[in-house]
Length: 469
Image (cartoon, rainbow, N blue to C red; front, top):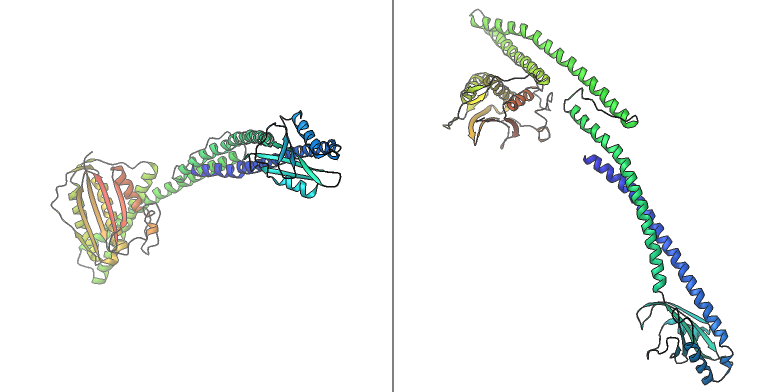
């Protein structure tokens, strides 16, 4: 499911992310276009009014100052659109002498449009924050010139841009709402499409994991006739083929193992018989011992193969009974110590006086486990020339430990050594199924088998069985 989640996340980033970025760019572009349009329209309107009003006062400017200023006051009082724009008349001292608002503040405006109008003797424009009121405004100032060319004042139109800004904000909001609808449609439709991929892919993944874990022959049920259906059919065909190959392999191993048991029994039997007599010279007797030892090793491998086949077919069973498992372990250790001594390995049993109860187990299968672990310790850890074996109680479990003093197991191989057919990189190799069989037997007992590198070198194998069931 993590992979499915990452696929959904990638789709979200690549599709929804691109739509959002592109959509936001469009929103900003639309807001900017409308902003330019609204501000340009407002500026054109105010410029037109300023030019017209200045033209209207052109005749009055030819009169004396008092008559001119009185005309300004009268015009400002009668200004009809005072609810939209404020009309101001400013003298050469930059003081307001008349305004359409009636009364005016003692402090005169100090925006740049006024000074620009006086300087250029034409129109000055200002868009920004009013230093007196603190609000955002647009102002247009037009110079009024006396007949001698002297600027005797400025008429100024000023308005708050709050309504314009609000209109631009509304446009941006509507654009954002439209973008939200588009994104929602993309998410819903895309999510439906992604689910149509992820759900069957999750089912295929789960089945593939089961097949990889050994459930060969499992089939994926799919209703799709597209690429997903093709993938499912391919995995189904692969699963059936592996199942058939596994069956052929198991049948071959089972047949071969049974065929090998008869000659191996004869070889070990006649070897033991010949070794009993005194007619063999030393070299021949030594050769017969090697034949006997290798014959027994082959017999154990055949037993492992047969047990492995039973595990694969689900036919592994246990004959459970109350048994002195400590005694079984000690007998196995003492029996194997003589075999280890032939290879110069000291097998030491670490005795203790701890009371260990009888437990419910298949003692023959557990002897097989102990022998297999001891054989691995001698084979892979024989360089240390010593093996320690011990048994003790830990809470409600009987714990068996076998430790060698060899080179240990590479850390990267530790999680793999119990897998079937895994033989690792050690120079002493076997069939790779002994530990897999041992773990299955221990698991059927409700216990655990673990391998780890011992402190100071070597490998420590621990078997835990429940003492009370």
